[in-house]
Length: 103
Image 1 (cartoon, one colour):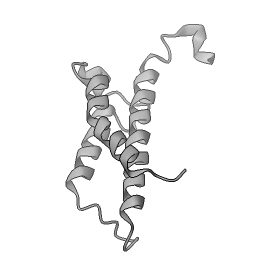
Image 2 (image 1 turned 90 degrees about the vertical axis):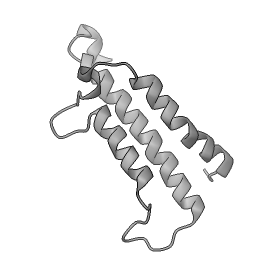
Image 3 (image 1 turned 60 degrees about the vertical axis):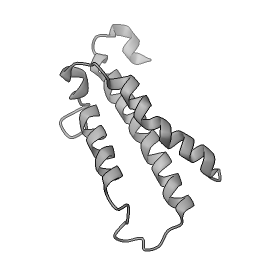
């Protein structure tokens, strides 16, 4: 799928409010929970996204890239991390769901 710049920007603009809706007011158990010791918590993911926003976005190995490529990368990157946070949060109840765990 070819990136439409307007649609890509619309997704990126929604990332902060999506994360705010998912995480605001939750306890540290939710915010710092992980799938296992080697994975990121929602707290860590948000820190990673903030770091990305503050960096120069210049990849050390790629050289010049187009704005369209960069924007498409950040759209996929943000959506991947939103999905990661949802997955990590859902797994907090993996044992509590009993027989539904198979589904």
